Image (cartoon, rainbow, N blue to C red; front, side, top):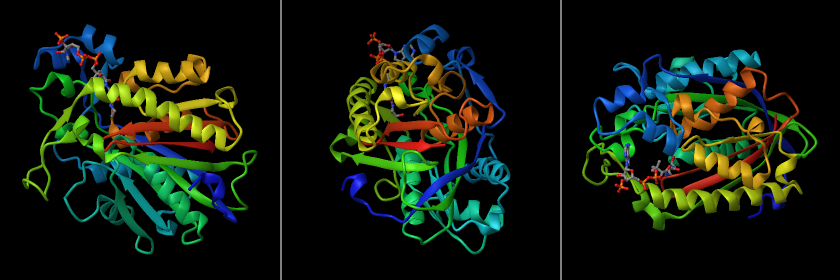
Length: 331
Ligand code: UT7
């Protein structure tokens, strides 16, 4: 169903944002002491210079709570008033219950409801779409949308093709309901666009799971294949998102992409005709934090004053599944 065919008398507006990175930073040079790699290779192929790694006692829900608290404070909102908490994560604290319910408990919310969304690196776009639709249907008036990962716990530290790429962190936005349908001139989530194609599972997956071998497993990726899909599928979904509103790349104030590889980010910016100054890139400092990468980048750029209220923001991402998606937001 096209985004245009949905009729709604409400839309959701981003009222708060926040990010959290665990304090422990590991540089490329430090990694090169553990595995056969180099700072030169990692920077040239990915743009990554360092990553944050969660402490032994830090859970995904702990990271999520820190980001959520900032988003609530920024919006002047109270945790107990939030109707819905959606956590996008591929590294839940436990197989069950949902990490979102632990975030709910730690925030002191007992009246709303909470669940996880699993779409790996596209998770935040998926979670935003879910929350936006709950708001549009009138089922909730506010939603915390969180991307949180302790992704480094899925890494095989002997596999240099994956272990240099990822990091841990969390980002959150607080959505609130506003009257009227989404309108390209008004603040709010204009539309969300989601896709998946399970035929490409083997390009990027984890070797374990409770329903298969009962193990957590480790990440395996065919980097070149994922790269090819990223270039093609992200271009398609971004075109779909922009054309829904009669927009072109030039109308976008900020591209806030999933942070996997600076080369993919640069390629998308070129395609959209956007100069580097209008692209938010955190990959050098955060590495790929999976579902956390887009909300962390949003929080960084909104907090330092780059993204201003009323500006047009395009987010996009692709991840395991394969899953991919995009959204246009008037901030
Ligand atoms: O977040 C989900 C979405 N994920 C992505 O978007 C990731 C997409 N893929 C990529 O970003 C890139 O494919 C990578 C960064 C993962 C890899 O870059 P690449 O330019 O595609 O490198 P490659 O896999 O073709 O490897 C080139 C060479 C190989 O050596 P040979 O066979 O040419 O001798 C690898 O063995 O680089 C070698 N290599 C490394 N060397 C040093 C692979 N990893 C490393 C490493 N350090 N860490």
